[in-house]
Length: 161
Image (spheres, helix red, strand yellow):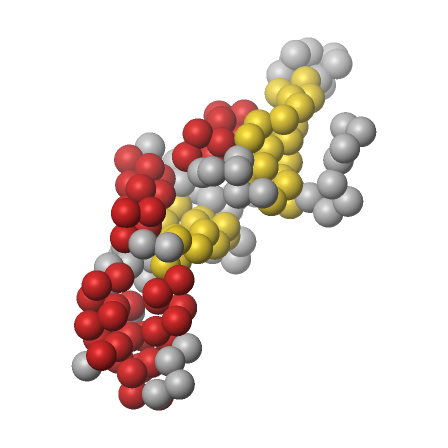
């Protein structure tokens, strides 16, 4: 804990923060699992040795996973937004999350099997929606609204008109 970040994102899990952290470390570059803090004794909802927290990094962002039990559930009010450079990278992250028990949502959003929301967001999408030509931006936005996983070629075609 000597090198703990001054600001860390704490993500609440029911009971598998360590499994989530390992999946993120395997899936995303510049990601890793750090210290695992285990309960020093029995407590009302667990036993000595149970994992309490797991330090992890997702693409350079310091996080800690807290095994807090089923009291609080994830919502889309919190999500990891991952910028991708091309369709292959977009597909790789999307397919890893969905293929590991996750579920698709709309407009580049998906949830992992732990219920955490992810936005797999190609930079081409953000550039298209920010196009200085309002008609081009609207066409790209309208195309995105019809998608689950973002199709960069379709976004660029819509942007061009």
